[in-house]
Length: 431
View 1 (cartoon, helix red, strand yellow):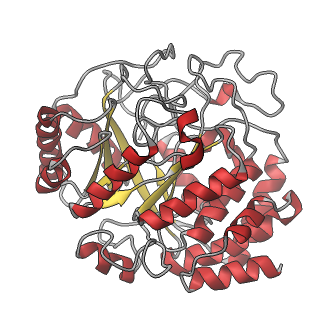
View 2 (cartoon, rainbow, N blue to C red):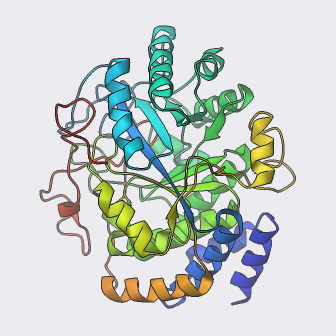
């Protein structure tokens, strides 16, 4: 396809595709899917080889959020049966993080529900960061605490934080339809604060909330302009007890096309396969490794994920390798820019070049097609399903294995379960 040849050529040169080209990726047919995966896989391999970066979530404070984000199980008014608890102590958070690090995680993501941190909360999280860094030499720490106020990003960086996550989630034009208690501009402001403080910015999206192709392209182009190092791609998990409980809008094929579009628009950023992958990609998850260079290991904030060992087996079986602690995730041009303060050059918003961040691995085009063919044959062509939730950072929120989505062809609520282990419980985590 001339379209794919053009997109590969632009991706290898870090050039921005046109909006029409990005929309065309989303409009490709299932018959063209393996060609799309193979083409985007070439771009991913150029910048990240066959490496897959592992990230691990620790939910520092769960539930009882005053914000009304429609996708989130922790939102104001949610009746989802999730774990609810106040702040973990620094030693508790460090112990939770250690489980993920032992499983191969290179980055720990500390998440707390709420509109944004108070100065006391920043002090608390700073002590937690220090505890994790003291107990685990070389680990990266990303904070995700909501909207930031003056000086808070700088204080987190001084405490040892490497990155800050705050997702845009959807397009500016439709943002008011999913949240009313804060604005799209508030989110953009927080990502910029993180950038300016010298933190590696992490910002992504949630697909599957009923948005159009144009909305998806809008938010990804906005992310490129904003220049985060990492772009997590979440797929909505329709939580029972939330406004989007019946939004089962995704198929595995649709999810792969979205990931491919993100890779073409942001060729050299760390594209992270985040919440909802197990629910919506299902047996096609290995194909997504040809597009994303980073994943979350084990469970999410309020929902269960795939078993940590299954993640590692999947990576190895697909011909990828876990990125080691001594390896720099970002391509050299991105890493050099980040060393001088994120967003200072060479990124998505400068000169048409796209940023990168926390990543996974990639494989060869031929291998991509071979793996794709085998996996697609195994999975068949499932119909539409749902995607993940987010709590200011990343969350594959869960829904009871009840009737939600049961009448929608291909919807798989049986794959979704509320997290009942790990942080905030006495049970061992899934890592």
